[in-house]
Amino acid sequence: MTKISVIGCGHWGKNLVRNFHQLGVLHAVCDVTEAGRATAAATAPGTAIVADVTRALRDPEPRGIVIATPAETHFELAKQALQAGKDVFVEKPLALSLEQGAALVRLADQRRRILMVGHVLEYHPGILALRRLVEQGDLGKVQYIYSNRLSLGKVRREENILWSFAPHDIAVILRLLGSMPFAVTACGGAYIQPNIADVTVTHLLFDNGVRAHIHVSWLHPFKEQRLVVIGSRKMASFDDVHKRLVVYDQRVEWQEGQPIPVRDAGIDVPYPADEPLRLECEAFLAAIQTRRPPLTDGRSGLRVLRVLQAAQQSLVTNGQPVHLPIAALAPSADHIA
Image (cartoon, rainbow, N blue to C red):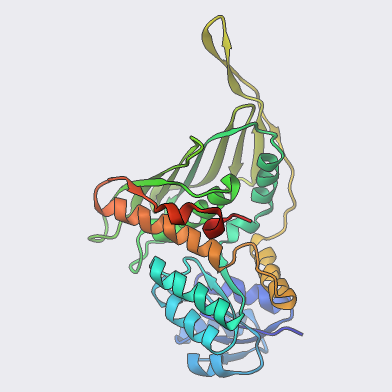
């Protein structure tokens, strides 16, 4: 049986520990803090709990290592795990620079190891249902996508809101459109800590005329997680807070030379209530066993990093557009599976 060790049992890591424990594959949990080790012991009774990361990585028993530590440690820990011959599942973002992300992808290829990134929203049954609607053409030609990921906290000190919240939405938008943007702009503001943006709005422009924008904030009076896709025939809204995917038979038609909105109450699209994180954990196990890249493999993570890095560059130049190099847009480099 495939065995997994998890490094990090904090705010999000404890959920990974819970899932792998329930799946019966959890070998050990490593956390450098007493609080993390106590959480691990309570979440996964009977599991080995260690404080030494080197010991966890050198343990020959687990085939896979799951990394759920602060973002600035992702690159080094993932590199060490790959060098130790482990398959690796690292939480988003893959790294904090495109160069580091590319180095991890190369290393995984060289060692013939699985490298997976924790873009959990891509495994959400609601998003999978939305993706089917788009791919089947139910909405018509996609014209515009926007997402709001807003709440009060959790404020980070290591990364800004763009790197903390936006990877989820970038990953989904790239998957829905099956291509990379050629231009990225981002604006935002830092109100709590100097030079750490608390609010950002990112615009993506694609060569087929499609635009997308992503609004993220941890300074918002209520929680909102919504993704809206505007098509030429219909519109769809996925609300992750209220667990609803709704399709609206709404569009704009021309009548006697005038644009007339066609309105509709909307129809709920049912989808399974499976926990997205459980599906993501199962996908990692399946990748280890089959040796087939998971949906959110290293290259998927690298595509998201390209957009994040471009958005960060635009953010620090007060919204100046950043154009992605043509090589980054080639199908061979960034094909969306």
